[in-house]
Length: 78
Image 1 (spheres, rainbow, N blue to C red):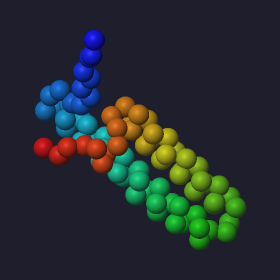
Image 2 (tube, helix red, strand yellow; image 1 turned 135 degrees about the vertical axis):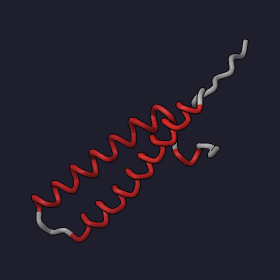
Image 3 (cartoon, rainbow, N blue to C red; image 1 turned 120 degrees about the horizontal axis):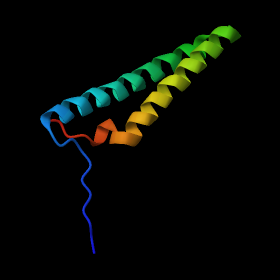
Image 4 (cartoon, rainbow, N blue to C red; image 1 turned 30 degrees about the vertical axis):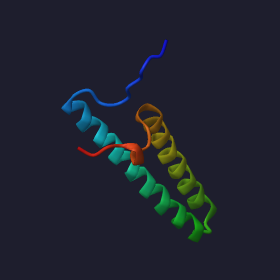
C-alpha cells in the first residue's frame, strides 16, 4: 500500500506564512555570510566570541525553519 505525502501550504494565508519563513532563511544565510566575513577580519577575542555566538544563533534559527518546511531553493513561487 502506497501513501502519498504532500508537504506545503494548504491555503493562500499559509503560503504567505511559508514565504515569510523562506525569506527569514535567506536573511539568515546573508547574515551568516556577513558575520563569517567579519570574523575573518576580527582579532579581538571577546568580539570574535560575540560574532561566533551570533553565527550559531542564526544557524539555529535557519535549521529550525528548514526542518519544518524545507530549503528555500526547493520552493515554488506563485
